[in-house]
Length: 124
Image (cartoon, rainbow, N blue to C red; front, side, top):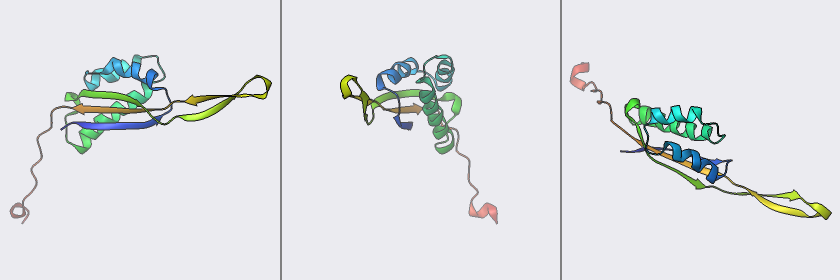
């Protein structure tokens, strides 16, 4: 069962974030985190945080082995746009948009063996 993490409304353009997401697509989580720690782009930090969040979700919530996780899917979609105006000559205003991104990471791997719970007979 794949596990996902999503970061919504990240204040970066989807094109810029998508370039960094393409670097780690299809890799293991450990490899992706090493690559992102050496990428000199500003958008590497939010992508790294979402991958770490997906790893934590898989480890704590779904009982996956952290070292066996692989990035199955990483997608960057446009989020809401903030409409702003920039002053121009002769008292005019030029509109522009501040773009945002939604980053979605899906990881999958090997699950740990489930711990046996104590039955009512053993507790007595």
